[in-house]
Image 1 (cartoon, rainbow, N blue to C red):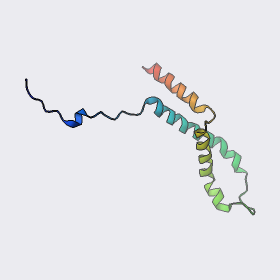
Image 2 (image 1 turned 45 degrees about the vertical axis):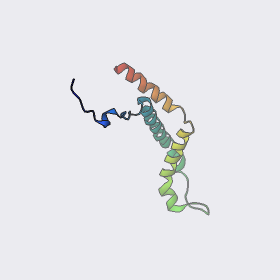
Image 3 (image 1 turned 180 degrees about the horizontal axis):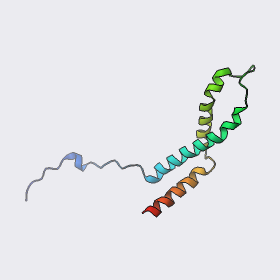
Image 4 (image 1 turned 90 degrees about the vertical axis):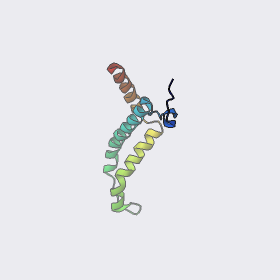
Amino acid sequence: MSDLAVSPALLQPTPSAPAPTARMRDTAEAFEASFLAQMLKPMFEGLSTDGPFGGGEAEGTWRGFMIEAMAKQTVKAGGIGLADQVVAQMLKMQEQAQ
């Protein structure tokens, strides 16, 4: 028998990639947030930014960021169920591919 030198790095566990379902869930939630932002956008288009408590031009400039934040928070709070449906379809498509 010969002595084989084994590198200590080979004995370390390799970091596993996130589970496909976790990545799918993140993608589905990002899609749901994007969808919600698009649905919320028309709700704010007719609002005037002038007046005693209006934010002026800055309010109009930052409104898109506020809408995105609202959409992400909605998804974080449970969303509207779109992400669940997207994940289910992703899993179904993955099963068919195998």
